[in-house]
Length: 322
Image (cartoon, one colour):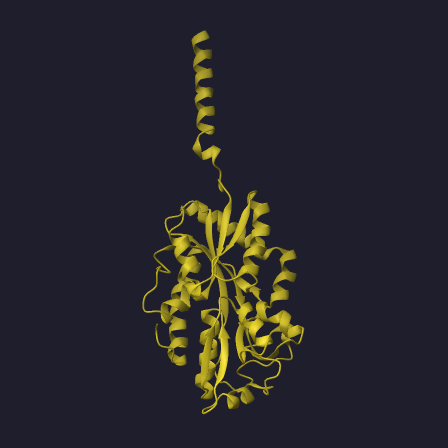
């Protein structure tokens, strides 16, 4: 009897030791999670990352910090995450710039958008808006095109690939002569636009909307096929006379390739819970976007199809690979 009791105690001790081992001692996430954003604070991607960080920190019961790492059209941030840990503690919250556009804009990238990352989830679809400086003598897209035809020249600012491609597709359609002024985020381009230093920007709506509503800039069109509720009076590019024009931005999350599937699944669940919560609706309405969640596998397939789509955009725009 004594031996059996001792044996039972030994078994309980072994089970307790197993339960207190690494798997139990380090539940995910085992440390502070970092959301790396490829663009400056105040950008649409930054706003989305901070929204998610606030919601998911409560759900994951951990701290989530947002680290802005702008530069090289998102390549610096993408490379940093591709070189980071594989424990799900570093997540790239990014846009189509790093994972669809850049592959078509650069001859060589410092990262592989597919091989270097584990897809986590799509997050949101974002319209773009064509906005002009306050004193520019153009109240329609047709008038803007006329101002930009040779020998004249207009300047535009762009803080990401979507902004650049959208402007160049417009230039091609209108026979415009443009010079591009690059920025580390569309919010910085809009600051110069309001100061009349550049002529126009095609910016993601979350970044542009506050200045449009304040009448600090003038919106001529949105890039979606349908009008946007927050700017119901603003026509689409197609309504403004640019046939077949439709360019939509999107945001998604990725971790480093090799991150364990269960960790990816945990992040995916946290993102979907945050964006689909009933009280998240006012946030999405305020930025003019709509939740665009997915499984990791769906995001992986989406990146492939979007890369092909952006190849068409870049070809139409006539942008040469750098």
